Image (cartoon, rainbow, N blue to C red; front, side, top):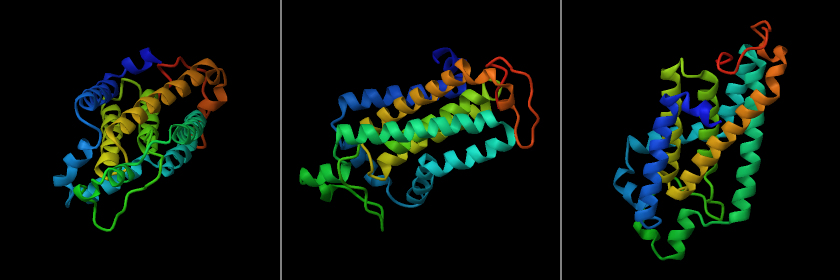
Length: 230
């Protein structure tokens, strides 16, 4: 898994920069300050931009790209299905097990809610389901897997995947849905899930050449992992 990601620096370097800078900030800045920092940014066009960006971390994109994958390669559709199930199941289990307060509940319990600028017409989720960020986990899992499938020969696609994943993570803080630590955990877990799916493909699925076909593509002989990209 490590070798697979490092072979694609156009995805790996931006995502690692985001994660490491985020970890540094989380060590020196008290929880919640990162949400208050975005108060002055919560106006148009940023409100609309992040409302749309956060949709990239929802299940519909997994399903949409998976269905498109059926046209190109059955393998791609199968890997996305496996990844989606792993991410959804593990994120829900972790949210329930950890039971961390959502930001709006945290601020309310600490009598700080009046200091948070919210988006007009939008109220963040409450409850104890903050850790990890499911949207971020989904985005890093999906775009990480797409970057692995694309391989290093498509730097533009890999960089786009990295930027999209990072923006989804930032959107969860901007929209007052998650803390920075929730986003970082989601990013790391999403990358882990992408690596697990990639390992499953290399260990078991590549022995079935029929998966290299698609509704618009005939099956081809089995290929090495680095050659069987998008």
